[in-house]
Image 1 (cartoon, rainbow, N blue to C red):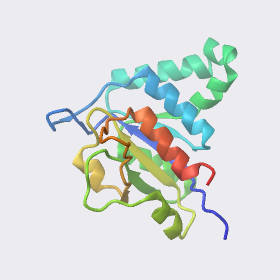
Image 2 (image 1 turned 135 degrees about the vertical axis):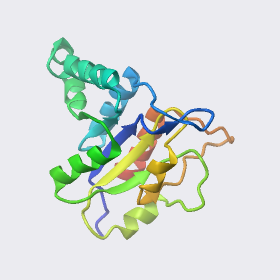
Image 3 (image 1 turned 90 degrees about the vertical axis):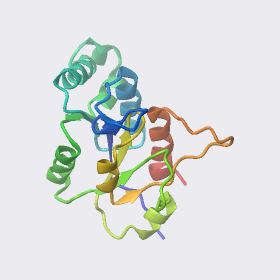
Length: 189
């Protein structure tokens, strides 16, 4: 039996996310997230990495960082980083992210969300791979701050089982969590 390898897209959601009080906020974009997610995505053959924020100043910051590495001196000095940073796309919302994927793929993506919070119904990656019946793209959502707001969680087709460490501590950086999930989804068995 041929092993299933999903057609992956990744989105880092900066709005709507939660703050430590459970309130919906827009979080700030970080340079490290952009670079590390792009590099992980390039490593695992992800089609695009969406940085999702409605904030104009944050979108400008992402574009400035990406341009430095794709059309500026950064790409000349480091062609490998240039290749990774070309995967970055800025979107206003989850809806516009899905629309972009639908335009590329001519079909709606299966949306998977991650969360460190407990959920009554989560799916394992193994279950999803075994039950995959078509070649629909998979959109993997990651939240910033204290995680995705409920409206993002409710729009998902599946909630992935959280990553559990060995000692009960459960506060990975989004970059680390994304790398682990990408390896589980697209890495070698």
